[in-house]
Length: 355
Image 1 (cartoon, one colour):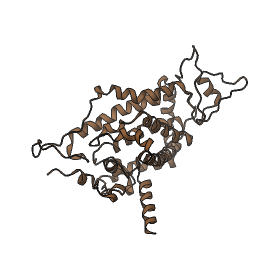
Image 2 (spheres, rainbow, N blue to C red):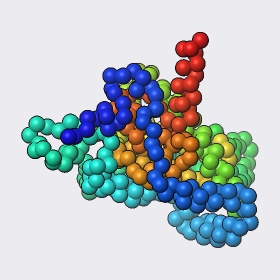
Image 3 (cartoon, rainbow, N blue to C red):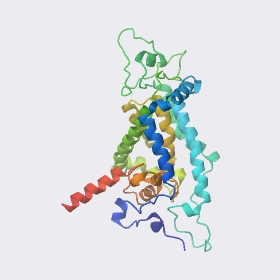
């Protein structure tokens, strides 16, 4: 017998408690200890003994910094596009060919023979998604070629020069090095667009990279949590967020089903968290693959044995099951990646109610 959507999700849509409380707990696979030890060892040694990694980090960053592609102002947008184009189809293929992993299978039509595979939601082939790709990349690419890039560790004269200005201003109209003060490229016949970016010469330590990544994801998770609540409870913002919930069964392609405003705002939010902590440009480069992977995994609609939520200890990861509940009932589980903000909100609500 086909399990009902509610039972597969571990919640009942008619239950108020289920909408706002965590669903059935996910148990780690028997072999979760091994990846935990590997990841934990890498993180701890990178923080405690950065000298071990410094030759490799220096070699990698200097190779990137000396490449024309890495100096291009469109590099980060291209990185997002390439990674998404690689990772999402892998998840989509697995979703389509492994019905037993799917979390939110909807009731089948009466014409379906008993024991048949559950019908797939509407999925698009990569070759049919050119419009979606264009809508995703064009706004970001426009910002890339009209605004000067400002990174930590880059001097103001270098920033000015990359934007088509004289390195040293002759009079008023100075340019600030802060990312909080956006500066347009100086458009001219010799430099019609912002096509290059000034990069820091300093090679970051492994300690700096790891700590910046951890803090950046913590801040993004926190800011997104509160913004996500606003997207669901403020009428105007709800209309912006609505396209993300226009689907039946959640699946990997839902990841990019966003309005242009929401898509740009989420990328700018990630950019803000990296800038506000003064993240090195190499930290930004390494942030993107983890960011894209996590976004796709929480929307994958599958209960994966090696899901990051099962590898993370103490049930700190939110994962695909909890995000599937959010998409089904459209309440609760507002966190993007981790559980502490939703769990904290539930604890406060319970504490206030008990008083």
